[in-house]
Length: 336
Image (cartoon, rainbow, N blue to C red; front, side, top):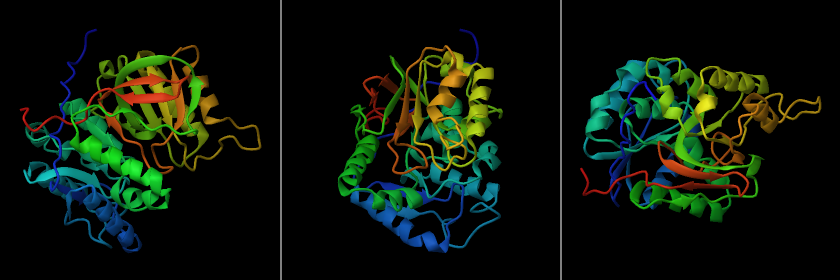
């Protein structure tokens, strides 16, 4: 297939105990009321064995409109973290509505020179997609710090919390593939089938928006890929339209499977007025494209996120309701 050459997969170096993880305002601001949740997130990261520091923009009450700061200020701080050899991972404090403002200000050479795990979802999924497109960097589509590790994680059963903590720690420190992600009875087979392919996705509106920028993933990136997505807020009709965009631009014809996250606060879904379910919307747009679809998987805005590393090869069996990570997300310290 002709087209843009895809960058080789760029894995960050595995973290070791005592490595520095920085919590940063990559999008939305920190509200004073959320300070306890941020403190709790720091405790979780420290329990995983890491040192934790806050980036300077992460200060309660500091904001500019809906963002933590002006796009250029966020980019400046982000670039400094990317260039700092002591910083071994960066986790977003929260999502928001800011990443589109600084996509063109990121020091891509710093990412290539010293790739680091960048953790987060929602608006942060835009960064994962663009960095993967530009450098091949594995994107860590995981919970953000404050409403995630410090919020949702604290309100989930202790056994599940321990499972997630071990999963995140393994993802960041181990060069062995994780294998099957821990499934729950919530997972649903929406269309049976099995496939293997690279995991690509994020919140669906950010997938669509990324493709409208000069930093879009080449369509070849989606050849044989397993597309994962979720949505929060908005309307069922919006989701249907986003999927139609993916159909029009040829992405749905290229992927080999789909994994859909738990929907969150979407209006017009499965209501009393014969409105559709999310599964019905997905299958309506897919039409006769016979690919496996696994639905209602725990990632996205609805609660604690299973990690979905962008760029990593996975095995999907929708009927058996299994999703397995076939490759590590990090490389060993010895490799260059």
